[in-house]
Amino acid sequence: MDFNISTPFHCELPVQLRFSDLDTLGHVNNSVYLNLFDLGKSNYFERAAGERQDWNNVNVVIANINCNFLHETHFDEPLVVKTQVKHIGNKSFTVLQVLQNTATGEIKCACEQVMVYLDPETRTPAPLPQHWRDCFAALEGRQL
Amino acid sequence: MDFNISTPFHCELPVQLRFSDLDTLGHVNNSVYLNLFDLGKSNYFERAAGERQDWNNVNVVIANINCNFLHETHFDEPLVVKTQVKHIGNKSFTVLQVLQNTATGEIKCACEQVMVYLDPETRTPAPLPQHWRDCFAALEGRQL
Amino acid sequence: MDFNISTPFHCELPVQLRFSDLDTLGHVNNSVYLNLFDLGKSNYFERAAGERQDWNNVNVVIANINCNFLHETHFDEPLVVKTQVKHIGNKSFTVLQVLQNTATGEIKCACEQVMVYLDPETRTPAPLPQHWRDCFAALEGRQL
Amino acid sequence: MDFNISTPFHCELPVQLRFSDLDTLGHVNNSVYLNLFDLGKSNYFERAAGERQDWNNVNVVIANINCNFLHETHFDEPLVVKTQVKHIGNKSFTVLQVLQNTATGEIKCACEQVMVYLDPETRTPAPLPQHWRDCFAALEGRQL
Image (cartoon, rainbow over all chains, first blue to last red; front, side, top):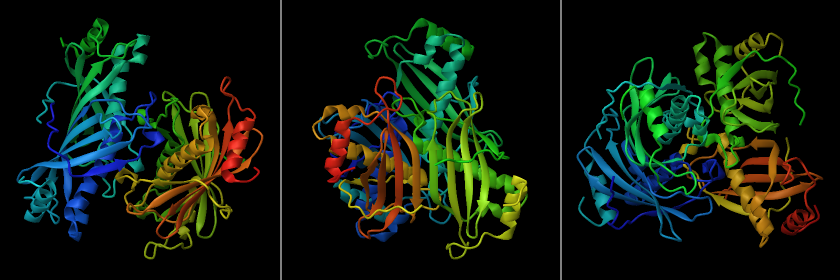
C-alpha cells in the first residue's frame, strides 16, 4: 500500500527502545512498532484534548492496521513517532503514523489505523462526538 | 479491507496466552496478535519444508501487514492460528492468517502479510527459489 | 541463593515460547521467565481451587522475586513450568517454581516468590484465609 | 530481603512506559521492571566505559535476580532507573538498581543482580578484567 505522508505532522513523540524489543538479528521486532504507535496515539489524544478531562476515557478500538515496514531499526537509533488524524468518517477515523530516525530522517515504518468510536454505555460503534471532531481539526489545522 | 478466508487452511497451531498479553480492559493487546502470527508462520515453514534442513535459515522480511481486528480476545479462550500461503509473486509472497477461538469458531483477527525473499548473501530482494514454491504449493494442495 | 528443589512438584504446565522472547543471542530473555512463571502460578491456583469459584479473584501481590538463572534457553526446547507452594506464613506465602526442559531434565531457572495476600476490600495485607491454606495443603499433600 | 540503598547512585536513566506494560489492574507488570533494569545496566556500562569501544561486547550473564516490589507503578508516573555496581567478586559482580518516581521520590522496586563475566572465547566464567574493575570504581568514586 502506498501511504501519502506528505501532509505535515503536528504531533511527535520521542520513543525509547528496550533490549527485549530486538530479535535474534538485532532488529526491532515488528510487533514492537505497534506498541510504539500506541504511545504516539495516546500522546496525540492528550494534546488534542487539551484541558478537557473526558479524553482520559477514550472509547475507541482499532478495527484495522495497515503497516509498511520500510527499513530495519536498530537499538541505538534516535526515534520519534509522528501521528496525525488523516480522515474522519461517521463512526470511525483514520490515524496515520510513522516511526522515523531523527538523525537520518529515514522512515522505518508507516502505518494507517482505522479506529472505531464506541458508545461509552453500550460499547457499540457510535458517531464520533462533535467535540472530538473539533479537537482533531484544531490540532491538524484543517477541516477533517 | 475484506479478506477472502474461504480457502481451506492446511496448517493450524494452538497458541498459549500469557497474563502480560492482556491490557487494562482484560483484552489481548493488538501487538500480541503479531507475536502469535509469527509463531504460526514459523510452524508453517517447518511443515512446508519437511525434511529439508535449509528452511531453518529462511531469509524473509515482512514488507506489509494488514490486519482486521474483528473481536476482542480474553485470557481463557482456546485459540489457534491458521496459516496459508495465498499467493506467490516474483520476489514476494502473501501469507493469510487468522486467530480463531476453537470452541466458538469466532475469528478474532484476520491478517495478510507480504513477505519478501532476500538473497542469503546480499540480503537484498531476490526471486523466491523454485523449491520453496514447490513446498508451498504441496502444502496448499494447489498451484500458487 | 541455593534453592531446595527436592520436594516433589504436583503441578506442571507446558509452556510455549515465541520468537519475540529471544534476545539478540537467540536466548530467552530473563524477563520472559517471569511471564512463564505467572502462567504457572495461575494454573496452580486453578488446580488448588478446584470447584471453588472465588479463586478467580485472587487478591495477591508479589513482594519479592528471587531467581537463579542456571542455563540458557533456546527456542526449540520443550519446556514446563513446575510450581509448588513451599511455605505459608501469616499474611504471605512462598511459591517455588522451576522452568525445565522435559527432554533433558535440565533446569533452566529456579525461582522463589513471596506473595502477600490482600484483603479484597481494603487491598492491604491480611491473614491468608483458612480455605486457601487448606487448598494449598491438599494439593501439596502435606502440612504447610 | 533488605537492600541497603543508602550509597549514592551515580547513574540515572529516565525510562518510558508503554500501554502494553500494564496488567488488567492498570499496574506495570513485574516482568517489565526487568526490561527497564536492563536498559539501566546498558546505560551504566556505556558511561563506565567512556571512550573504550570494547564495552560494546560485554560478555556477562545474569546469574541471580533478587527484587523487592515495594509499590505499584501506574502509567503516568515519571520514572528513572538508578544503577550502581555495589560489589565486585572474582568472576562476578553485583549490581543494585531501583525504579523510582522522580516526582514523589517513591521507590517502586529495588533489585540486586549477580552478573557473571564470561571469557569472550570460551563463554565460560572468567575473572573480571582489571580495566572493567577500574571503570566501575571510577564511576562509583570508591574502591570496589
